[in-house]
Length: 371
Ligand SMILES: [Zn+2]
Image 1 (spheres, rainbow, N blue to C red):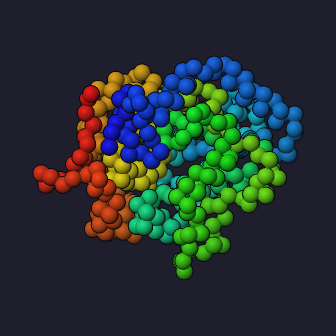
Image 2 (cartoon, rainbow, N blue to C red):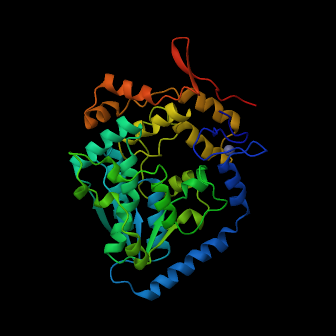
Image 3 (cartoon, rainbow, N blue to C red):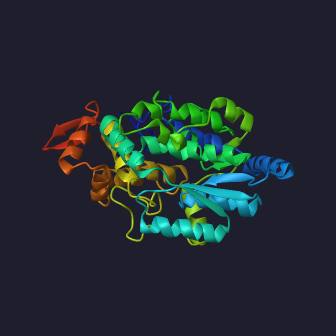
C-alpha cells in the first residue's frame, strides 16, 4: 500500500496506479483539467443543447438524475435555468432519507420549478438484495448502484428523452478508471462499469428475489437502447467540476449542510448527507482498501488548493478510525442483522494484506505519513 505523493490516495483503490513521479490517476486528471479551455468546453455543451431544442421532443429535452445533493442541484440548475432545456428531474428514492435530505430535495424542486419523478423500488426486494450484498459481498449498496443508473436510462427510453446529464465522471475525477480524458458519452461506460464485477442483478435471485422485480435494476436491452439514441453525458466534461464550489452555489439557493456537523469519519458536512444507509457501505472500503470518507473528501480539497497534503494527513489520521455510529442502528434494523452478526460479516472483509492486529486493535500496516 503506497500513497500518492501529491494527495493522500492509496494505490489499494481498485484501478489506481502511481506513475513514476508517484502521482495517482486523479492527480494526473487534475493536470489535464488545468490545461482545458473551459469556455470552449461549455460551448460544446451549448451546441448539444441547441441541437436538442430544434428536435422538439414530445415530453422533455433532458433528464437530470437528482438526489437533492449539492451536485445534482447544480446539474439541474445548469440544464433547466442556464441552458433552458425542458428538464425532468428523476430521483431514485431513498428508503431511509435524513431530515436534511428531504428538505434539500423539496427546496431544490421549488427553486428550479421543474417536473420531478421519484422511483420507489419495491421495499421487500430492495431490503433483501441489500442484505445479501452486505453479507456476501461486503457492499450493501451494490444493487442500488445498478438501479441509480439503469432506472434513469429506462425512464429516458420510456419517455423518449434524448439527453441524460450526470454530474462528474467519477473514474476521471477520483481515479480508478484507466481513461486519459473524461469522455463526453457516459452510456457505454455506465454499462461496462455495472458489469465490472462480472455480476448482474439476476445473480442475486433466489426464492425471495424474483426476476419480475428487477426492472429498474437493469439496463434496457442493447437494441432498444441503440434505437432510442439517447445521449448520456457528464456535466463535469463541460464545466470545471468542484464539489465545494457547487456547495457554495446552491447554499445560497436553499441547500442545507448537515445541521449537526460532519458525520463520524467525515471531514465535510455537506457531502452525501441525504440518506442513512450509505455510510456503512463506504466504511467497508476502509476494511478492504484502507481508506474511506476523509481520504476522498480531503483529496478533493488538495486538488483544488484548499488544503495542503500535510493538513490532509492529519485530518485523515484523526478521522479514519471513527466508526459511522450515527445511523448504525438504522442500518442493522433495516437489514435485520444483529450487531454481533454485523461484526462477524465486517471482519470477513478486512484485508489482512494491509491490516495487522497489534496493541489490542487493528492497525494499518502502512499508515499515511508525511514524506
Ligand atoms: Zn494523487
